[in-house]
Image (cartoon, rainbow, N blue to C red; front, side, top):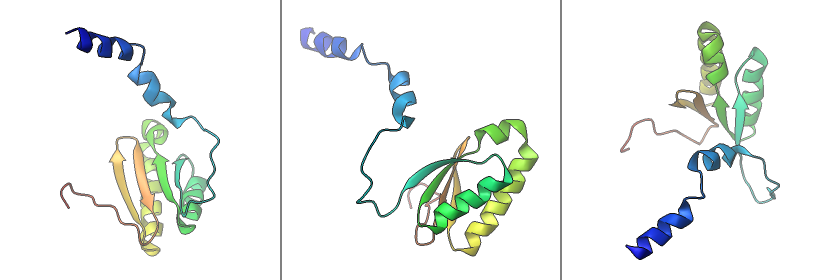
Length: 118
């Protein structure tokens, strides 16, 4: 039991919630060797659809936050997601909701497996 208590005592100082909340903090890194990026973006207004499309057309993957709009205006959210979906389909990209407040948007040649086990 002594070893187990020592291991657990070392981890008591780590706040998991704090750690996970700080994962989004921007750190200075070199992106020279990257072929593409996963970019966090927000979907709030019509212009955000164009910004997301520009990133996807450049070969990047957009991790889109829809939580703010889903709380404020569900009708507008459905409209913007429908517009985004049609534009993504036109360039042979893909789109999928990955959580209650997030949508993943990918360029052509990157497909999202939407069912577990595939």
